[in-house]
Image (tube, rainbow, N blue to C red; front, side, top):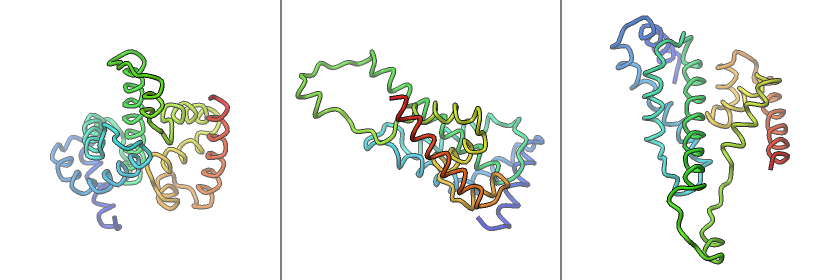
Length: 190
């Protein structure tokens, strides 16, 4: 998005916050591609055959954003940060729900050989990442926010710097630090 649409998004967010219900209708077409990009990036880390699709993630985020009318929107960057956080929570909630069902619902009896071949490979444990991010936020809130925006939001270094109002170099430093700490913490917790 260039400057003009970014300014228009900021104006529409503020209008919507101040009671203009038609502002959201004008806003969604402007941010739809950004939401799809965030969702697509978030879904890339999910296993094949994930039951939540990109479009469903965008729709769920949209529904939660509509309920977020009380947010004091600052600008497009703030909107993207909130959206990335919402998508993170949606995916973590979905993973927890799936894990809950695994522990007791819809069990199918399999032989040990069948179980070995049926076990899915999961490249990233969203719950473990979410819990580690929450721990990181207690002593490194900026690093945790950078990690959330980069990992879950798929924002570039430049976009993350814009969202957070810090330099690209600070984002790179925080991202490197957060990745190392998260990897260590997730490995330790297993």
